[in-house]
Figure 1 (cartoon, rainbow, N blue to C red):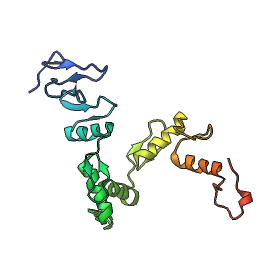
Figure 2: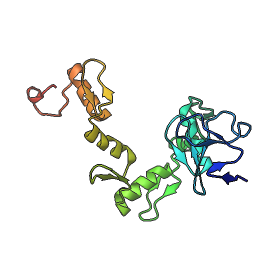
Figure 3: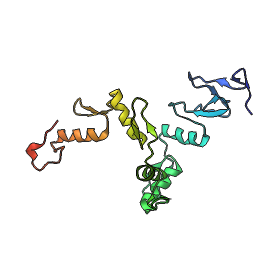
Figure 4: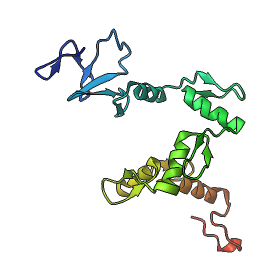
Length: 197
């Protein structure tokens, strides 16, 4: 049981990482990849490598695995490695054609639960939970919000390796790369109408 006295947890030392709160005993978490923040009575597990937090330890441990290159779970069909058993199971489903996640509204089935959630938002609920804090934009997918935010920040993280061009998304970079290969980036009937950028 954890006791807090004068706002400071007894038996827990301050985190060596500024702003991250308190570490549990090093005997419990010797690798320091877990910091425990105390916000009221809510336990929040904080990743030491990025700003990620979670109130669930299982979600936290799954997240921490993205920071290393270990892929101990191997597919018996193609020997590809995965960080988690769930990722491996989803991958094996692509080999076998198994679609265990079924939509309760229309009966469509999907390989992953994420695909089912995305389907339901696009086709049935029209929910857009990912909202821009700068404007009224909202999206079904977090990745689309991330790309949208670049329109506010001007960030262009996808750099052409052959010139100074940089793009906000991979699609535009791939389209741009065709200008270097001479392939027409716009599907036109007449090649002469193609404008290479």
